[in-house]
Image 1: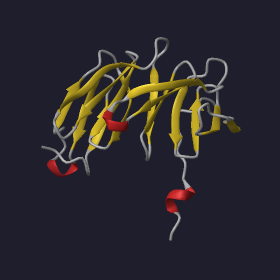
Image 2: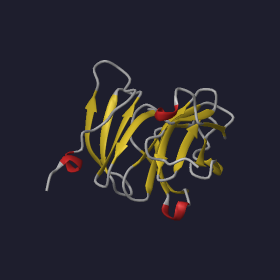
Image 3: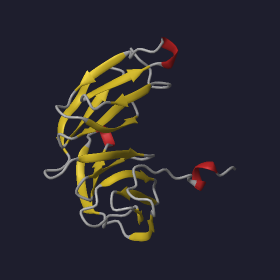
Image 4: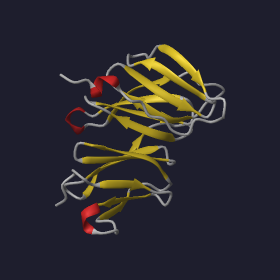
Length: 182
């Protein structure tokens, strides 16, 4: 049985997810396939690895049990998911190629789709990257913009930034709330 702490997980274009323990050498300690197209992004949530794929679905792997927990969960009927994000709480966010943000509830390990929202990237701006916390959601897009929204349902635009150099492929945010001392 594997412990989650210290593991490295990697989604692959081969539709596999490989899990590594850096203390056990360079080979994966486990690999699994639960999609029929490329893995676009992954995230670790508690004892699970969530993978989103070009096959328009997400799957959930139980790390400690070493088996698929849920698979074939439809994210979208058009386009495909590109990015998945999870922070404290029970909400998981998935961005797709059709400019939509899909919110999933992970409470009681349900991984149920709650709602989907158009995030305003134009034209048909694929959401390529995302970061969120309890206060806001940041999305990056092929349309060269970074949009900052409230983390409400529906999200409301706070600010839009534009990259002069083209498509936004990834982003991160140094959250001041997570580095505040007491």
